[in-house]
Image (cartoon, rainbow, N blue to C red; front, side, top):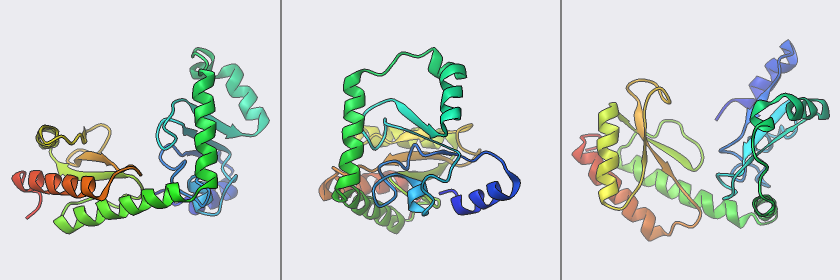
Length: 208
């Protein structure tokens, strides 16, 4: 996770524009699920805050929060906004309802974090390199591009889909599988996944 407090301190000192892209933080971090700004006690401090409804919210679309003058500029000048199709009202209603649920019921986040902790503990115990990841996106570092794809296919045959992430998305030599933990996973499902990933990792000589 980015050291947001340090970034904001530098922003205040040098006067640059601080933009927070909180695609993976909304609905996950902060007491009310507002994201990383709330998590660090810096809610509303970024000059521009944007995030998606397509991850924790389970819908699609995105939003931008900023001063009115910035929003007006984006509405009139941002090609990605000007030349796109408006979201269906049903999708907007679903997104707003999801935001309200997360803000009002802490159990959604609590259950998610219990699952995150369980999956991470199991994979770390097996010997996998998970980098310094925080949150429901768990990277399982494999190394070579071809090995990441091979391990993805091995797990797919077992009924588990973990996307292989390769350069240029990640640095050369750090290709990985991307595991996404969700709140609805049962303990049995998670244990089965840990077992399958560990077995594949042993075949790939990633873990003992």
